[in-house]
Image 1 (spheres, rainbow, N blue to C red):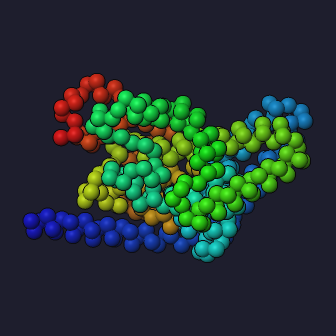
Image 2: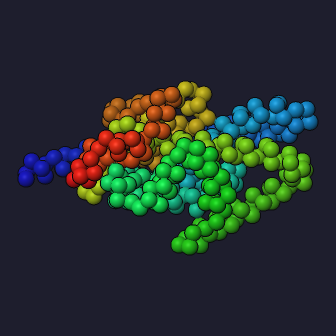
Image 3: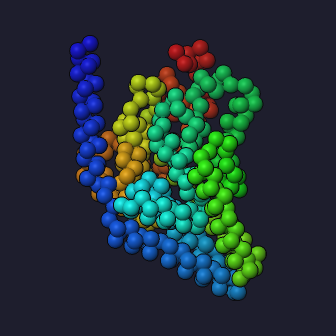
Length: 346
């Protein structure tokens, strides 16, 4: 008993020391934040202008401009994301203003998204608190006990073509356009205010360049950025060796270091994704600005324990569908055929 208490005390002390070290990196530098806004938003607007001009010649010239602008749109979303965590500027007001503006650019209501995302951070890798801003995850036993309809819904949801194809449409047309019943006044105003701002900007663009020109630029740009965003969120929580736990076995530090990953992307993709590949660091302390994440990762020894995978190896995560509680690992649907129902969930 005493050994157990000492072990728990040591773990808590160690976790406290880790969190204390991270606090040294959570001070945003205003000049870095402003520079990141400049090198993200200005090129994005310039690419929009070039895309409009290119339509006068050929849509084949427009396509590469759209693809490049997707990278900048993802980078703008990371700014929006940091503002939601209060980590981009020292000022809460500045975070709010920039968050609202970058949210409109990304068709995402700031306060509505911010509150839902905060729940994800508080419950990540916790089997008892699933369903808050995460990817739907069922255990093997839950799947076995589910009705045919629910199994069918789950298989459909986890299908890559649905998740990364229909997913962006669902988010842009429904999830971020309508509010749930149980929301705060701030969240409701965030959704409706963002919708109004989008309508005004879209209306002005349509008046200036025409409906067709606006749609053939904006829609593929928005769809591609959302699909990439869903992928980044998915792959960094669905990988071999990921951590999930229940009740008292769950703790925030382990959930961050083992429940999130280091997605080691090529330098150009690391830049466009605003270092979000250092997801383990971000989850452990969401107040660290994205431009401090690489330095934090390299200087804190505990992060050497974090699961790491590269761009191509990340695609292995697509085969994972269920959490096997008995073996504490992610498995695919094929694993259901090779395992006995009587041995699951014991």
